[in-house]
Image (cartoon, rainbow, N blue to C red; front, top):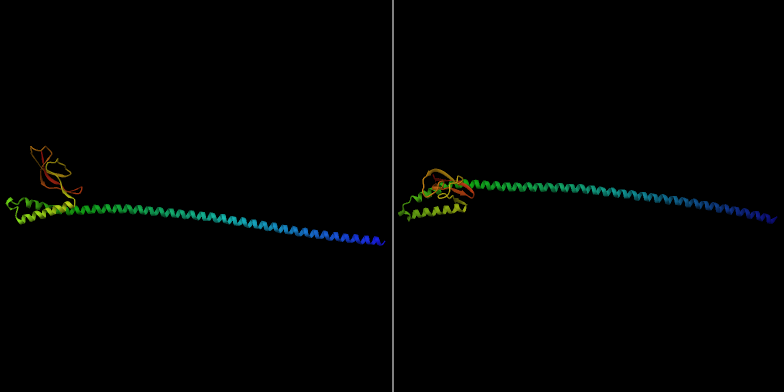
Length: 213
């Protein structure tokens, strides 16, 4: 009977021990499951955070790219504007230089036209001096002044127009009369009544000539 009692006590203890082991195992399993769930949630949160950061980086990249594109457009616009202004300034400079040259030539031509009658008077006066008086000091002084005046006009590119012995050219000659001349052909200049002059490539005064019939 004592053996049966001991046997019953052992069975009860074994049952209690098994129950405790079961409860411990279930608790440990629950704890492990909880930890696994928390780990999974943390992993998912970390992945979402990384994905969010990746999206923000992409957005920032595209924003920078878009901003850079606008800057490049602005630079191109300013560069084009500068090129146009430089071209306009260059055209203005060339036009101004051309106008200044034209104004200078017009002014020089006007001055030369006023000097030519003085040259004519010098030539008439020297031509009227008798042969015996050409060695006089006064006449010699007049000739020197005349030569100096012609030298200065030549330095300014003022040159006389050829007339006698050349073919009549209405661009350079002004025919005021016709004459007979056996030595020259018809249409040739036989006599120069007033000397004409050129300033560079422009006629300042046409030559007044007599043309052979």
